[in-house]
Length: 201
Length: 370
Image 1 (cartoon, rainbow over the protein chains, first blue to last red):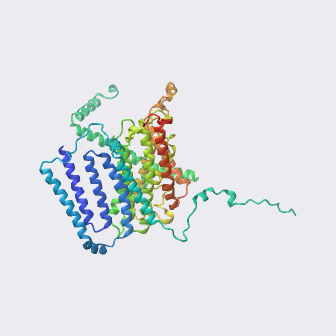
Image 2: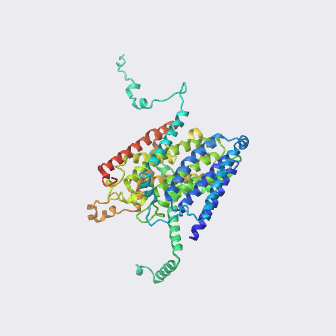
Image 3: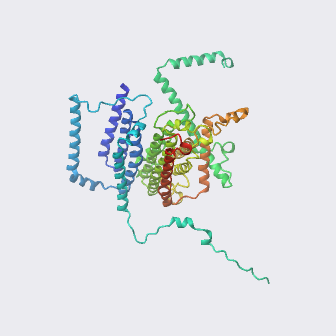
């Protein structure tokens, strides 16, 4: 249990440090890499809570796919630091109010904990051989099937909306018809001509 | 056994074992695991070293050349000569580059390639970490490897390197989806995310391997694997003819050697994984052929183990070299088309077919689902 707490505080400390790094890095690419580190540390925290499926999926989806695309965009954009700084003042009230809201919620949680209200009951340790992948699958496709399906449909809508927004017909676009290319046969391209041989002298 | 070696040596071994077993349990565990990790790492690095040699030999023979033949007997010392040459070369860090990320990038591509070996079963007892969600762990780590390539391309502050990084990022993200879907089929057939369980569910000879019933998924997984490792014909991230050497154009010396090591370690990894998912891993192809047991000098063929996994891995490594010697490089838009418009639909359809077969109790999965 001792080792468990040491590990928890170590990962939590690294996570907070990385999160601070996201905000205070001058270079946007460094910010993205700090965010990747934050995701990694929170995945480790979930592993400590024996939620190995969620932990690995967090790495797989967020670190492996979402952040790669994020990095891609940040590298391409070449963010102008000066312009971003001028924006800070304009959006300050939004960010401050969100931060305040979160702080209030956290303080409430800690206050409730002190009042002796058990909000979650902590992490019950699971029996040997328990697979939370299997357990999650069993609940996701039975009890929560509507929420699951609705989330899937919303994501699908988002994909379709993004594609329709960016895909527009441009004049003069050269596109290959792959089916036509595959269907081509030698006789469409080459004509074999039968000729009489040259007359002998 | 004891009379074969001197009494003094036997005493020493007994004494050593006694000391070892008297240590606290966690120290024993730590020692054994460390040795397991060391053994796997050294084996992987040696395989990588010799596969660079065999690649040049194989491609050489396909193109009617001899290949390396100067260092050592028939050139077998060539990989070591190459490594020593790279080690004593200067590492040049471009002056306008991002120094930290430039140095870290090669490591970021090597670490996932080596860390994945933790969950790979080499035979029925040798696996460093036998975890339940092993297959997810493999997927997660292979998807992290792309950071090395992207950061290398960006940190070098070179146009060619950035172009290579962009190409590779889009390509890897695209093929990862097809790869993941192909593995969903494997998980459905094997009924587990644990790699050891997947191998044991394929026990019973060639006919029980997932190769035949999941053939479309096998083809998709293997080709996506080739694309994921940035090997020919999908090596647009390097693309010598148009962007010099792509993401590692600014790298030299050891830093370049680490990229090289990572690329080949990834090839070995993908070969081994394909063998585990579709060719029964360490299981013998002749398992259950009882008539082989009656012939004394062929009986070993039916016993599974590391040699079988190694043989299957070598077969896939050979096809890597074969592809490189045979196919011209894909055009970039055709790579994207293949990944998104062909592979993903194929995998989705085959997962549907597999599910329907399991539901209606047809064919190889009549025992599954329902």
